[in-house]
Length: 246
Image (cartoon, rainbow, N blue to C red; front, side):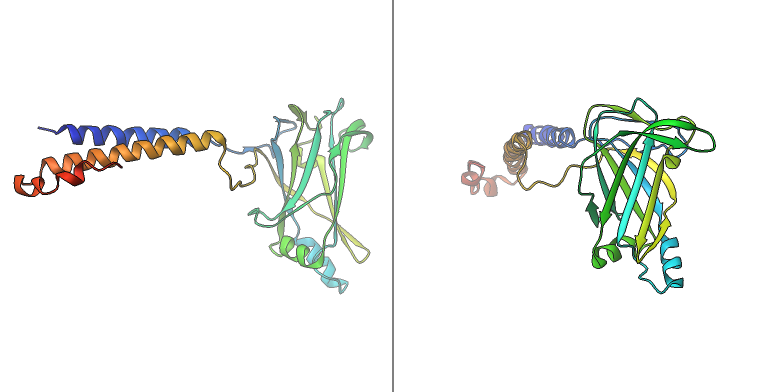
């Protein structure tokens, strides 16, 4: 026959587990848009472009230059009418451990595009970033890098209908008078994680407090169940501990 203490402990364990599970936000999987001609970006969603950058080091070596670029520039185009959203641009390593923010917020401006499959008006955003030698080495020593364009405004759809998303982006790496293109290998849409915060949000504090109270109740219930199975003589000598507040 199960004791009341054991039943209470089991219920509290399940309740704490459900509480903690509910407090963890569910992250959506990245969406691969490499072969798509358009991408929908909700507020704070971002396009992650994987760049092949090893070609710069090869060409730089032939000219006796540093294998790490000092300037990174890009241009991204979309069909008109272009979204009115502002965008952030970040250059980072594939792991995200090292990053550099482009200095300005970006907004699509009217431009003309000429290509094999489309010629005409487009919306365009451009960015340029100057890197120190040390930061450039950290970003490009692995032979690939990520360019991230994050939508800071309302929901937006980007892309040029005649081309896949990677073809809408052009990236150039420059140093010592030499400029080399960085091919786009893949493109994904994802919601970047928020920056870490040392102070829990109000909701987090509540969850922590409730969890602490339930844990306290769990501890007391476990002690009550444990004492119910101890020999009578030993239990009698421990009754003062069973009555302690958690």
